[in-house]
Amino acid sequence: MKTKFILAALAFVVSASFAMAQGEPAIKVLPTNQKGILKVLFASETGSEVIVKFYEDGQLVGTDKIKGKSFQKGFVKRYDVDHISGTNFKVEVEAENMTVVYQILESRGTLSYDPQLLQTTYNYPLTASNRVD
Image (cartoon, rainbow, N blue to C red):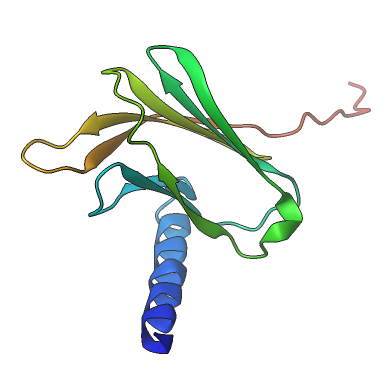
């Protein structure tokens, strides 16, 4: 059991480092081998809350608000989405500086899902300048 935890933690750190080094979003929706289960990987530290929203055919069907102080270097969280059966199924993850939207497709020949990144939006704060020309 302890070995599985260490391997999972190591995989999380490697995934987070790789995502940041490649310039890819530090937020990912990942498939699992279990029917109806998705994982959300948040590979960054944040002080504000992270909101995970689930949409079916454009309608909001679920929301999860995760407090920012509940994790220091990110998190991986599993979600049971077996009850969502629409063909237009999306997951949106909102963080302080970034929002990602994934289209979730059913994998052919398996019971799992195939998440595909649709959109990444970086939310940088506005700054003002007292520059006079």
